Figure 1 (cartoon, one colour):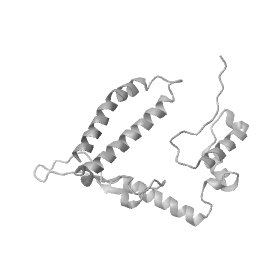
Figure 2: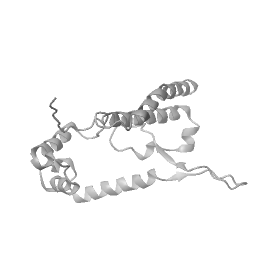
Figure 3: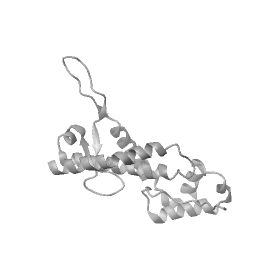
Length: 181
């Protein structure tokens, strides 16, 4: 049996189809990438001086602001909160203080107004349902990504099997939260 391999973009990429095609065309046009991955430096060079320029912001001031904005969001995503019992001085394990809940738009960037304090989520069944649905979607995406390795690896088979067995329980819990909210 003869196999043929070709590069394709993953289904979970959040970029315009036109840009995905442009990127793949660049990779496929270079014979050196048949047996190795393009380096990040090669890719950045092509994005700043070559045929991939449309994929990224070329205005340095705008690009810097986007970078700073992304870094600010990154740090904010990593703020955690712990509940401390004043009497025993014991603390719960840390959890995210602000959770992004996509409520207003489907744009690539989540607006600041969609970051909700975790305490508010815990006390609001409709928001909790959205968080649970998002978590399920993220896990489904993870499963789909690693199932794609199945042809080459079996290391994830058991984990994926266990997840699929419990997925219905999670979906039932989401339905239960929906009814109570």
